[in-house]
Image (tube, rainbow, N blue to C red; front, side, top):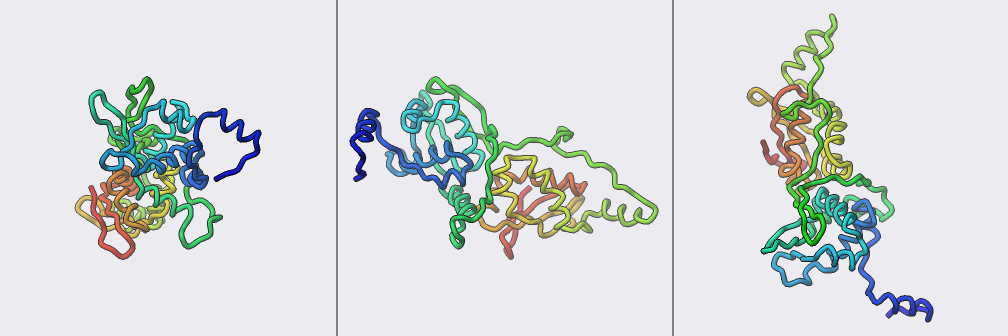
Amino acid sequence: MATYSSAAQQVLDNLHDRPVAYHPRLAEVLGGTDEALFVSQLLYWDGKGSTPGRWIYKTQPEWMRETGLSRYKQLRVRRHLCALGVLQEHRRGIPARLYYRLDLRALNVLVDSRFPPDSDAAAPAQCVEASPTCVGQDREQDGGTVLVPDGEAVSQPAGADATGQSPRSPPAITENTAQITTRETADPIFHDPAEVWHKALPELEGSMERRSYDCWIRPCVLVSIEEEGDGVRATVEAPNEYIVDWLAARLDVVVRRVLSGVLGCPVTVSYALPGEVPLAEG
């Protein structure tokens, strides 16, 4: 049991509360001390409740008493964590109650990317802090605003049309390069995957939170472009199965839109682990 000086013990006694678990490294993983505090508290309560499926019910006043986070800080933190895929939220009952659950698999991916098991803890972060992005619709509950998550928040680049496609400038044609340029534009199979991916990365980065980009897009590479019908099929290689599943389920629309803009034709994208058969999407 911790031993305090008499003066410090008097302060603690006068507070009439109890300390909460806090994991400082989560601040590096999640991009802020508020996020780390929120997730540390959920980790503490994980498995301790009677609700099936590890769901945890807490009201906004309860969160404030346990963490000191105001209503607005709670909303910002929840939006950020939902965008990262770390936090899940679910409404149930009449009147509706908001339940929380950590996606521990997603959290482990982020922790491993920041603190790889085979490297020392001082390795530079692969995921960096980003400003939070709204990932759902706001509704009222417990006297405050709460979030109903409905997927990864992405922004549409300036100049994109109603379908999300970015306009492309016509290729520059000179007397010496007209034949080559025309062939590459008309037949995208001649594009080099590494060059295409290099051109796509800045737009992908601008289409989502920086942290999401660092964690889900940056580790990936475009490994092939093959002709398919009126367009092409592109294969994106990811370092682990979780990122493959995440790209296919949450970011496929964004990746297809950006690659279509770079290649100038419809693109179908498949996702795969190194050396494995790709997981085909739209």
